[in-house]
Amino acid sequence: MHIVWHGHYVKYLEDGREAFAREFGLGYHFLEQAGYGIPLVELVIDYKKAVRYGDTLAVETRYVPSATPKICFEYRIRDAASQQLVCTARTTQVFTNTQLQLQLMPPPCFTEWQQRWLPSLAPIV
Image (tube, rainbow, N blue to C red; front, side):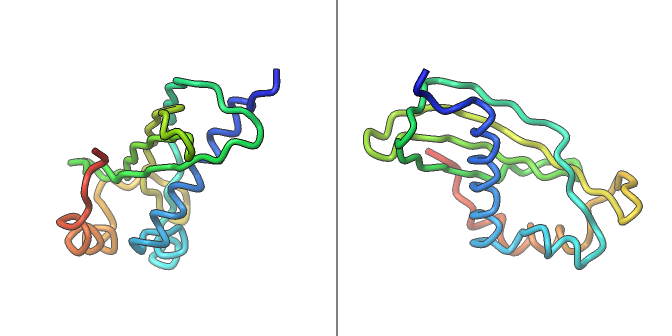
């Protein structure tokens, strides 16, 4: 069909999360060093337009604050040349300890991260 397989979009979202983590210091290693994991528990993708092999994409990643102890992101993937929206998505990750037990309170390191970065994180327009 000469289009990108739908499953590859999950990797594009991961690339967006990793870029966000590098820029804002919320990477997996940061949380692992504090004794926490953040497994993915929800993934929703809304496909808008097919992507063809060779297209260059731009992934916009936005942190979405939550009143509960989880990390939520929203994404927009666009064709880099035309700026056409090809998909929107959202992911949710929860906190676990080293025994993979769900944490009902946010880790102190995450609370500190929110206090530092939340005021400066602008939403996707």
